[in-house]
Image (cartoon, rainbow, N blue to C red):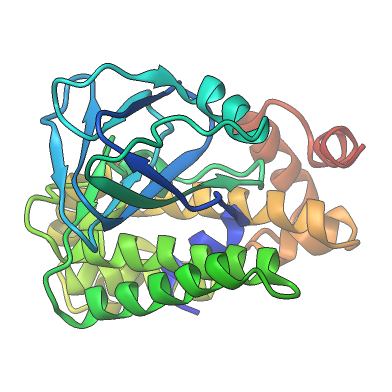
Length: 303
């Protein structure tokens, strides 16, 4: 499994897709800041998305917008429109009195949210921007996005058995495809995703993630990707903000957290799986990084 797949798997992504609702002008909804990553796809009509500090996005039919960190934002039929809180909109919908149901131009949106259910955090999450806009111009990734979105639209329209499960799985695929598409765009200057655009640093990450238990040295990691030790260290830190061995240590701790929560191995076995032959040394490092011993962490989080 490549490094990005490992990271995404460790985050335990969970998705919810909202009911598909038509709007007619004038309309606007404001979404408050929360812990979820929201996504929107325009199916019909005109739509604008506004986030404080960011340039307003005019969505075209087929476009996706992802708000990775759950920033407060507004979705509008026109940039000058007023907006109502999303809670008020949902309440009226549940009461059978949907808002914005006039006779003017109709807009149709698919929306939903993602959450990372794992308590484990990774730099990947922090490397995502406040908003990602993926337009509908056809290339391989966008074509896959359109196909996944078409399946979502069909499930929302028919609501057959197990639709909620299918919609959730499709939305998880959409999240990964959006990240892929974003990685292909220009302007990803640094961070975890930028590192994946560098073939040698990406190969190094894959190496670490594939065998975190190996006693890697800086020289071995550099040689493995055909770089000098000094250049490798410089480029790795420039892109990821930490040294290669520092990243490896942090990834080992993240993997240890995952193993402690998901498996029943004893502490010694977990330590060996992430590259530590001494349980005492592993306990000391884990406490330094996490603030508590592996045993205390397991009891606290699993309880």
